[in-house]
Amino acid sequence: MNATYNNTVPSRTNSAYNSEDKIILCATSLHHRRYLEDIIHVIGLPIGAHVRLRYRKPYVEQAYWDMLNAGTLSNNFKALVAVSGLNSHGTPSIIPLRKGSIVSARCDGDLATVDISLEEYIFTTSPGSSFLDLLSVIAKNLPNAKNNTALYLQPLSTSPKGLSANSTVKGWEKVAAAFFEIDNPTSDKHTDSLVPFLFHIRKPSDTVTKKLKKLGQLFIKMGDKFDMEFHTIARPTTNAIRNPLGEIVIDLSHPAASFISSRRVRVDSSRDVKTLGLTTTPLFSNADGHLSIRTNIFQYEKSDPTSVSESLIPASKRIELTLARYDFPLRVGGIRPVLASALIAGAAALSVYKFTTQGEFKGQDAVIPAVIFILTFCGLTLGIIKK
Image 1 (cartoon, helix red, strand yellow):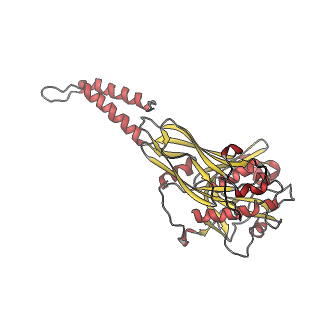
Image 2: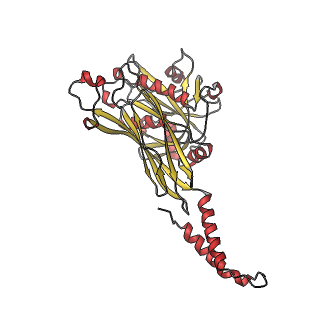
Image 3: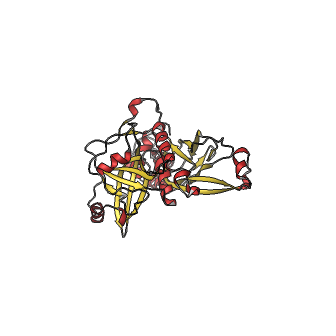
């Protein structure tokens, strides 16, 4: 991920939507474990990553459900992903998280699934404006803590105004701060389901991002080094962080890729950044695998709760829980394996070609070398991978 950008450039914060955009509100909540996983990924994954949101029929606007069921929905809709909850004062609130492009949407029985290619982070810029008030004008039956029949998936009557978009760490920090405001111990009795930290993966290079947007797949050229830059931010607290809150763990399953760095990002400070790297080995055909990102939180065994923030606790006295996991399809290859196969096949063909003493070229003399070239090339591209 070699793209560079300057988070202080004001021009990188623009209006989130155009007036002609068709917007679908994709809301979620903090009620279930799966929803927390969706929120973590929507906030943390890089531009172009695909996420799938699922909605049962009662929570989908009927006209939109009919469109999905009939298969008449086009892919030119924009998504507005938001989360509902209670703010620090205990009042219902909705905050925007991310914009995106709807890749596909369909109904399967009583379930609607929406696949979204993530784009910029979105947030309100006017100090006195409330996103809930802005949304209530262009949406209906919005979700809140006391409304069990709310519509979480619905088209908006017009494009929302007063929203800004930013694709950098600057935008992520704004969204993370807003999320921690509604996901806090004072507004939720189930404190064990809270998210103690969030992560952000820096935007990949333009080439990687293009493939990611189209297919939801990470693509690395053979022989290239690939870096992933992780930013982490912890829930605001007045206490010093003595013991790690958790860690981001990267799992790699691919025959032609390996780590050249640690595969863990430990969260032991309020704000941090770390780069993880992997490299690919020579191969003669494109190879597929996957790269997984696990968000693990630590729970500590403690006899005296008042001493936890003041003492160091050994790893043997903590429990590791996986809060979320995301799998990137990973392909390694490109044109280089084809060129390598062609060069080796060409060398094999030349080794059996016999030149005449007069240096003349005869077509019949090239038959065997041509057969050797084709067989060698096909044999290599069928999947010989250097272990």
